[in-house]
Length: 124
View: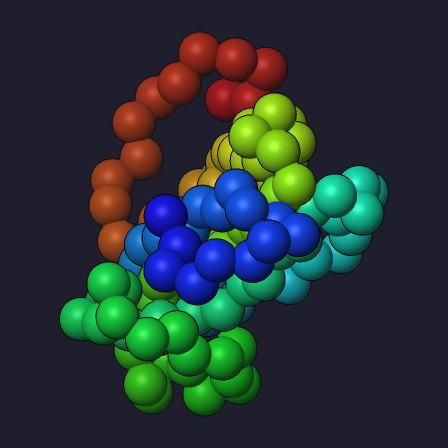
């Protein structure tokens, strides 16, 4: 949960998602930010942070993130109610799941970082 209280947006959540490389974290942010938050009752901010500082200060998305090692995508949500926070985070998780599946199937960095296990489904 957040440390700063906003009376207009009292409900908040910080989510840190680690990626194998900073490039993949940056790609995920760019893919998710295409879809703007629909409700004015919810605000979200994206950044990348170094794995070593994932529990500390946030960094910005940079073209040279691979050099700085910022491979953790940080998402900070603020909402007017817990219900609005839950709905927005659920939507984010659905989008993130799709992005991770596409990365796993199509991106060379992900393929090199861990072995692919056979999965049931339409893509084989």
